[in-house]
Amino acid sequence: MQLSIVIPVYQSASCLESLREKIHQALEPEQIDFEIILVNDGSRDDSWRVITELCARYPYVIGVNHRRNFGQDNAIMTGLRMANGTFVVTMDDDLQHDPDDLPRLLAAIQASSDEVIYGTLNISTDPIWKRLGRAMHAKTLEWLLDKPSDFQFTSYRIMRAEVVRDITFYEGAFPFIDALLVQVSTRFGQIPVRFQPRHSGKSNYTLFKSIQVWLKLLISFSIKPLRIVTFLGILAFLAGVISATVVVLTKLLWPENFTQNDAGWASLMVVMLIMNGLQMCFIGILGEYVGRSFVLTSRRPQAIIAKVINGPKPTQ
Image (cartoon, rainbow, N blue to C red; front, side, top):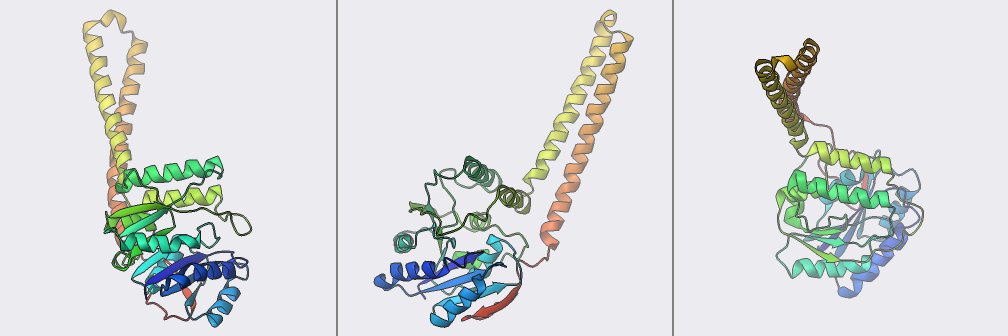
């Protein structure tokens, strides 16, 4: 198998046949041996029925049905574990990622030493909150995981099978594909791809869901946020010590300017700074231990598969 295409599906019954047809039209003339893995992530519409029909008509379509909605990255991880291709593409189900770019992505990774190549998108028509969210997401990745600053990470990407194998070893309940890729590889590339209007309906990603995704990235793959608490605690403690020194020196050198009211207020503020700083340091240190324990002991499943068509059920 040359190419596996993993597509998480949510509320997309109306566009799945068009998506399959466009993928076939893009790859068949190039004589590319491919499979399409559709992972239904708890859709409430007829998505699973449509996937079942596609699997019955086209042997190269593999259908996977989650028992409930686990999230886009969890669905992608399910599909990646079932992929048989030498190269694996992930793309969205709404036809905004143009299937005509699939041969270009494949040719680009075959002609280079890159292990992951992203399709970069020019999405200038999105609401400003989405564009700001993408920028904040990118900066968070740069800070937490040393993402290259000149790269645009998108969900339209092609990977070598060995990289896919490495990231699917991750068993945590909150996977984040880009974060996992940054942890296992530094050989990234990118090429521009076309961005198409949605086939139908509207985006399933609301502002609230976008914030949830950002928080998952922030707390699931690094303990740096905990270290900020420790750092702020140290700063508060040092501010308290410096303030105490200033208070004592002022009392000794200029006692006439240091009234009883001044002394009481200054002493109270110094004690508060020192004690709050120490408390924040202790919270940060405890958070380090709790965070590491959480990473090591979390055994919540990424997803639960109800049924697989045209493919083996993976070990969970």
